[in-house]
Length: 271
Image (cartoon, rainbow, N blue to C red; front, side, top):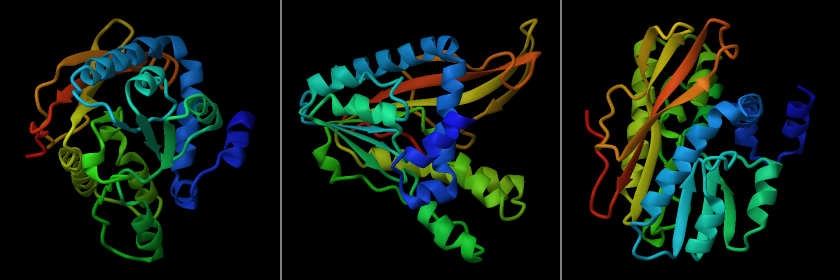
């Protein structure tokens, strides 16, 4: 807890990231990674391999954009920095270990941004009494044509987590309304990816399973209900919460897909 508190104080982060809960979530992710580094390693390796494979499809390599750079465990940053003239890492905040890592590469920049585009509206609207949920409005850090490669890394199913938690803290939100809002945020992210002209790599978990110690699947939940994705190139299971994290007698697995979308090949954000 002391390390988390120090991170909270020492990390440069926008006010909205602190107030809405994004920085707290990122620090909690770092703590979980420390606990389960070994168990998460295969997932991180699979993510890096998927990004490398998608990167190989890029004919021009001026500028790479990474959404959800996070702790950088799932991003082959050194290879991206060598392959592209510029690399821009985008997340709600960047902790000091990742800042120091990125600083090794003179062509790598970090940007703090609300990727879903709802944080300020939550803080200035809902928190002040507005009764309408803000529409997601993601914006690229530069003109979309500037980027030859765009990665969305383990992000899409998580974009609504902090906003929904923020909303729940201000009053009950019906389950159907929460699910619809999560779907709208995910679809907006897909539409945003469609606005880029270069190669895009989408890595996202599409379902989760609670598994007992004897291997029995106790429950399966879709992570992106109502969101249609293109056919994936790769998929794997991630032991997201091993035994002991949530329960002594069950673990949580996430089914992750990696999708490479080439220029003029849109992601499907339909029903």
